[in-house]
Length: 349
Ligand SMILES: [Zn+2]
Image (cartoon, rainbow, N blue to C red; front, side, top):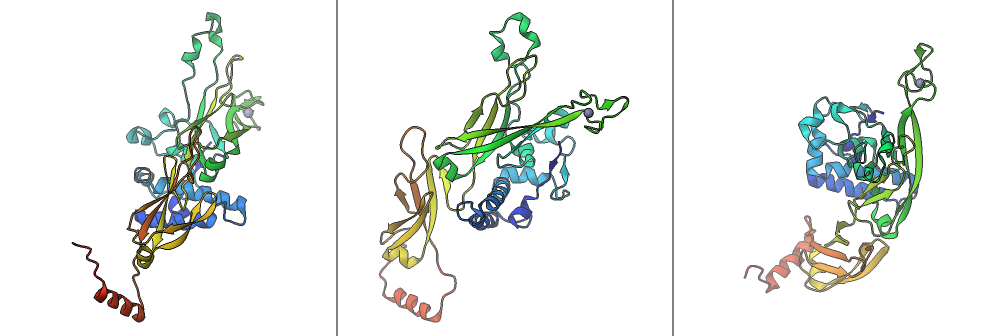
């Protein structure tokens, strides 16, 4: 099953040589526009939001971006993608394909990541080797002909809103199974099997509902029992493991269970104080910026962060950032000049 090449630069609308700050800005702008909670057409926005997130997962991470760039610009968006020969051994961390570029033979749908992402940056696709030796212990000698099915592992993109409230998602796993018409040989009566076109393979899709509990964290593995590969000789199926990746959010960064939100202030708001409406995962709340607020000051909104499975929810931390106007009118200039003459403030003493 070949995967389609994705042009992440195109997705974010940035040049290939764009700086980190430009990439972050482009992501934020698009993510605000297509965030499923604000967009009018939710279904369409959700797809777009996932695409933007995937692109930013790669281009917003210097190590991943470097690896992606090493693939070269020779690929066109949507083209059938195979990693260049020898790429895996040369790059080390390239997971997902077996030795010699062997196709893993299955893929996921509904996890929020494309197959292309999974091939390049996804979790290790196979949990254990064919023989789940740890489970062998209890079996009698005569059972050697049966083998428990392999575990499958992939990533699942979870928005902060889903992590907050919990969710149920439909996930499909498409397996390659032997073609039933030709028994996997690719031929019928000495001719190419018309059902599989001679590949000997057919696709079988299993769909299951995956419960994402409230309070999931980055990297947490969700186990879906019995949804891995089929067992041999009547043995049990393997399990499906989905590794949580929290979606990047236009307004928040995640630190443990805390959410960090950067709030821009004008110099006079910082000096005089201000009332500010800041976003939370459950709507905007008004906060008071006290007079004399410094750049980088952290204001804590207790319990407005992400929930924890055990213990109190995290906090929302508003980090202030004082922005200075770059262009001012003549009238404004006069006021600043007057301020400069009258102020007794000495920042360097
Ligand atoms: Zn066939």
